[in-house]
Image 1 (cartoon, rainbow, N blue to C red):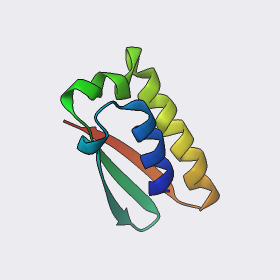
Image 2: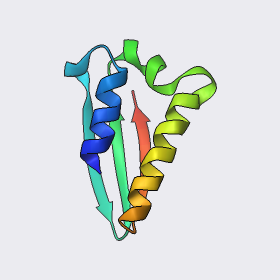
Image 3: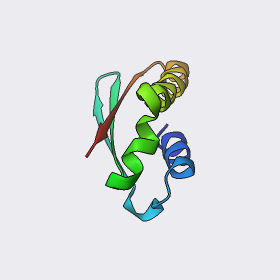
Length: 76
């Protein structure tokens, strides 16, 4: 699942070197903390949070196939 999230994020941002994704496992919940450059944070969140919401929906679908729950947090 992390590879899918990383692919999505890397295709949105301009500064690909600044992308860092950490993963925490707790029972059936997987929490991903996504860090990007400050200049790319607006791209990730999108207007009215639509891009972030779309990323979360995609990851929810992927995690559902693996019988897990994915939580995506965008960190400054």
